[in-house]
Image (cartoon, rainbow, N blue to C red; front, side, top):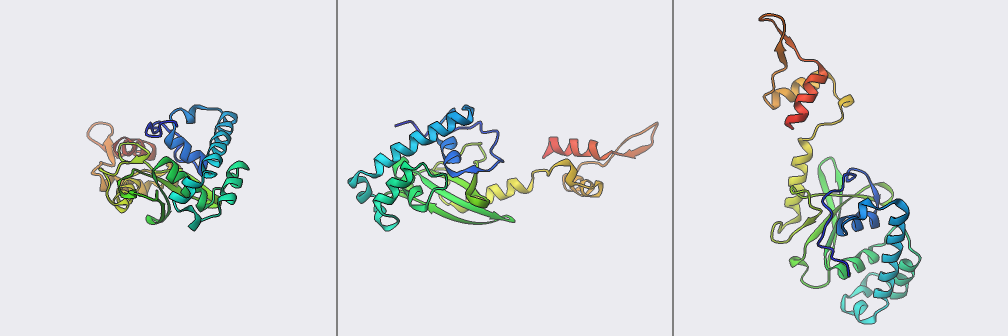
Length: 221
């Protein structure tokens, strides 16, 4: 089994949404983000076939109490058919196989609702990966302040604490340049103790341009 603890820390496309399987694989397998689209699809298919074999094991299915969520044959069939949209039962198979909590959250104006798919045993001692859900079953990874996709249990004992940190970080991020009017940047500058003036000719002070102010705030925030 591949070492899932080698989580990818260089996902430069984390702000984009993609299928659950791609987000999960990218977080848990190094180098996945460097593959071509064709290679990613091949990797995904290979993993799904392997999971179909895993879930066909009666001991695995019974020990992890998966009967509460889905029939064994249905799970196996879905993995074998390489479906793009994973059902809750399939996600629970992944959580138990990789021995990791999978938290799928939805962010509505900074308020989080979330569902945790946990391994059947000792889930409180396992690391957690957090995915932010989007429309039509799309997701993106949420990172810790160390840019890791995995939340280690010794560092975060309550998933709400992570969401609080995430929300605070989001509130301090600049929107794209075109989203602001000059008065909006003046207000931001005041909040961060940035002067909106610069030296003109002689002793005259003039106001900074919108671009100058945005660039200065971008370096600070």
